[in-house]
Length: 161
Image (cartoon, rainbow, N blue to C red; front, side):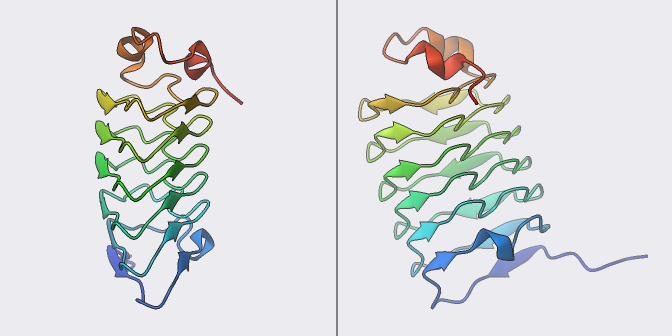
């Protein structure tokens, strides 16, 4: 039986915050975020396992807790310099995420932010990051390379909570 699958969606321009429960666990390949959105809330794209592409506009200033957790098809993402906060478990278990550019606007990485990002081989750590939370790089693909950076606390490589 061939059931229809949602492959793309464009949300209305009058939304201010995306409520993750509206798209929770949906099969979404691509998502277009209008510039009227200022925050991607907690659990926003959590479990969107087929999400391969997303463009985050410069109107976004926060990526909430668990925002992209288990987006297992996401290979790269561009975080604009308007974002000042990456929530706890933000990219946890994004197993195909290969590279990420963290802008200097971010000063803190949430708990387990990149935990289990096993394919992550390219990540820049700007000097603007002054707070690294527990387990933020646990079992990520660039863990060994990051351990060479003495400014990154050892708690980043622990399992976290």
